[in-house]
Length: 244
Image (cartoon, rainbow, N blue to C red; front, side):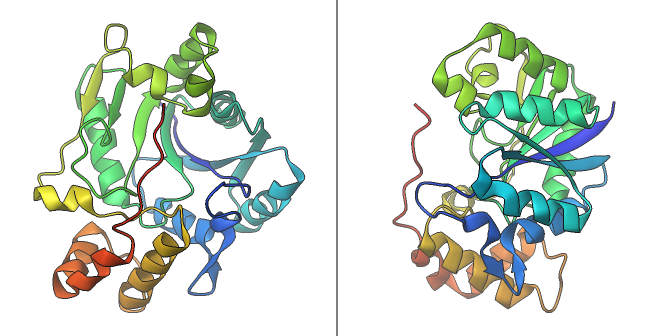
């Protein structure tokens, strides 16, 4: 199966517009995320799924400079955009990610892929039963499953949240959740970027860890929080927007 990582990215986010191109150590946040995703051993490629809005010309240009595939589609119908992005690079298996996760860990994605392939399932993720910090989210499912979902639902929530219909229908699809094995407090950490405070925290983590080890992973991040527990307070007041 050709395995491709899709990255949903757009400039017109509601809480922090333009966040995907904000600088982290001199490079756009999206570029830092792509740098990390290129270390996923089980993936054959990456495709940025952005919109056809003029504001996202800069995202398409960045993907071109980085030599990464890019597909442009509907801003509202994200499901269709991701599906067509996957088709554009002939992907059989999708690893769904979003561009607000610049600390995503390649090793976690490789573990997700190994778990998916070792089991007879339609969907495998680390989000159904949260045990990882928010911001390490990834979901694995065949492109054929997403095409089937596209034909089943026109619910706006399903079309906005790509894999929502899959994991809300365990009666139709075989689901598997990957557990981290980490202490429960790890799941309370917020490593995604939706607000200025999120961005400040992620920037601080990069500044602390990247110079010594550009390939730093989750273990190094958790060790940093153990050494500097005050970091967790930077964005602990932020609440994730509800899906429904």
